[in-house]
Image 1 (cartoon, rainbow, N blue to C red):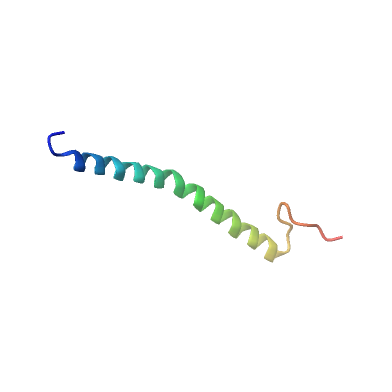
Image 2: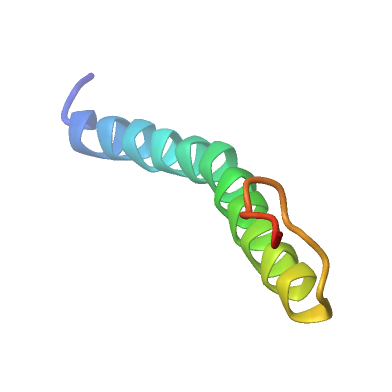
Length: 55
């Protein structure tokens, strides 16, 4: 690589990091959204999936 190896490999690592973030962020955002939605359902008096029913 004629002395440019550090730049090439750092570019690969930065690109890999960006790809990982692009794939991970939507999953994290979905989990947060579902958690917020479950809280809203509980506060409104509805039964969230998996919640115990009152008898």
